[in-house]
Image 1: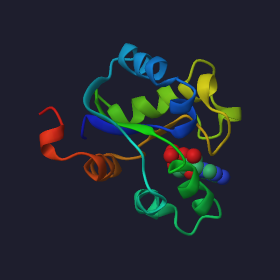
Image 2: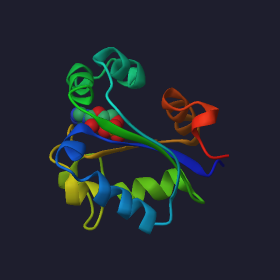
Image 3: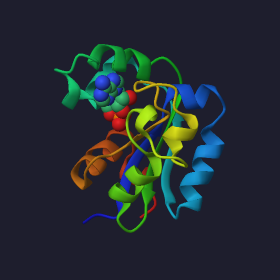
Length: 139
Ligand code: CMP
């Protein structure tokens, strides 16, 4: 398995000034930041990123929300990165997220849920490559 995952700090968390606290939790959990940028998606690019959810009822809202303000995108490295990062962030719906998780601490709703985390090694590579060239990441 790959030892990398991909994350975004979403517009709600960025706007509230929680990016630093979230990155601190990520580093304290043992992840190494191997690529990082602040940017803002257009609705079209958000639609491309979330194309796998195209048929879901929340897709349009999600694309509008994810393009509504700046985000931070990052590639993270750790043994068992994908699964361990999903444990660190907690359930998609913050109402169901475990105590001490990033979403429990910072998420507002199932849509404005503070952070994204890849759900598989394959998607981690696809999503990381959506934002970062090889030159933009630590080898
Ligand atoms: P994320 O892990 O980025 O992947 C898809 C996103 O869709 C998810 O986090 C949520 O922000 C958003 N979303 C909005 N509504 C739902 C829903 N009902 N179920 C799952 N994801 C949702």
